[in-house]
Length: 140
Picture (cartoon, rainbow, N blue to C red):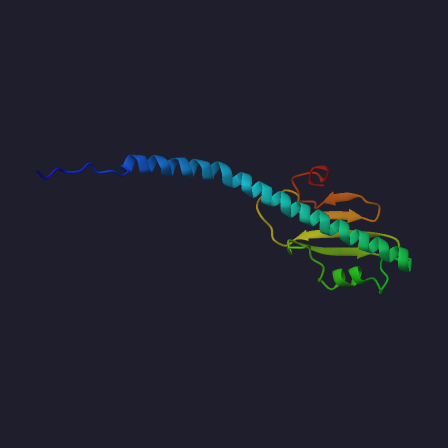
């Protein structure tokens, strides 16, 4: 009277089908995730550059020159100490008394970065580095 009980479980074919489905979902989902991460990094660079330009404008209003020695933002940028929030971009500046051009240089480069380095001038002109594959309009 020994009966063999019905065995339950997954067959190898069923397991392979699940693995294939998960692989397809990962192949579609991961590039979309990377694209969203890259957009976040770009926004971080834009915000850091805009904030830096605002600080330089305050220096100009207060001291009458963008390159005044009392301007903390300029001093930090000249000492390589001005970074975006997550250190993705380093802010550098070329300033004289009446003009400046600030650049957000990409520190943590990825292959998806089509904008390169971001630039912003005292006139509000926005740009990208010369090697960028996207225009400034699309990156800003």
